[in-house]
Length: 89
Image 1 (cartoon, helix red, strand yellow):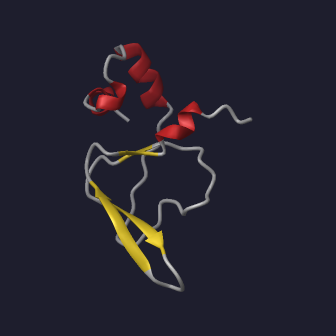
Image 2: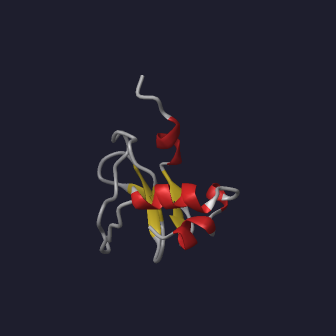
Image 3: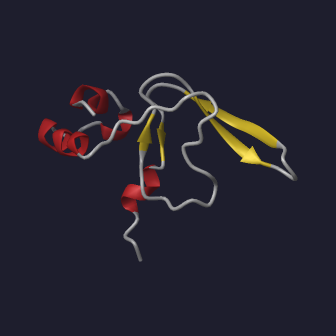
């Protein structure tokens, strides 16, 4: 992921270019199609995601097969940021 994308995000505000380069070099770009699932409730939290383009829906499973959209995220939104603070204990 480019440092220009990372530096535009409030989450990374104040980090120098070398640090942003390090973060960006470890990043992996993924593309999702309509209906694809990024992760499910209860999955391990070992990644942080940044929405670069498009929209991502946060969907909550309800009773049976019903679901509810609880949020729609757009470019610049961050998910799973708690994973970078976990120590693995």
